[in-house]
Image: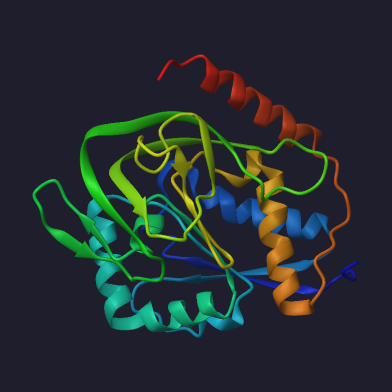
Length: 253
């Protein structure tokens, strides 16, 4: 079991630009849940033109944003942060990327006008703007969640981009209700090493404590070689989770 007061370093990438639908709440949930587990988390914000060795962080988070913000970040990735972030991912730092941040992990995003906006290319995926907007509440089944709790993940998606995974990559989960990556193959998000990409806003982590603990365990295993966490009382989180499931099931897709 991890001792009381062990340090956990969290990086919030582009907090001023990528914060759609309450994505900042994911950083709040990471920090608070780490504290409840007896850890000593700290959060450092990194934005445009800031250089950093991302390997020194345990968890890195980037949220979603509009097309304008994504283009700004794309340029910053290419000129300033791309290689350092890639090195951190390959060094098994934990990375959670939501919606626009998820799309930027891939090789490109192709707009409806045919323009290809280059991504950072960390993960073998690509995104093409579709004619139909994929929007609504989502239920996903995943095998990543440990323990006796539900193996479902709930959230809210709102994207016109349709994302496709390269050979050998596995999705974050299987869509039960909603559209997921592209509305075609039944997959939602991606898992690559300790990187999780997903379209789920909401924000994701407060309603899905099993996902939060999955990220924390991966981060602790990388840094300390131990991944055990003490059990927590998740009654409030599970009520929110179950309410989101009921809401998602009221909409026919």
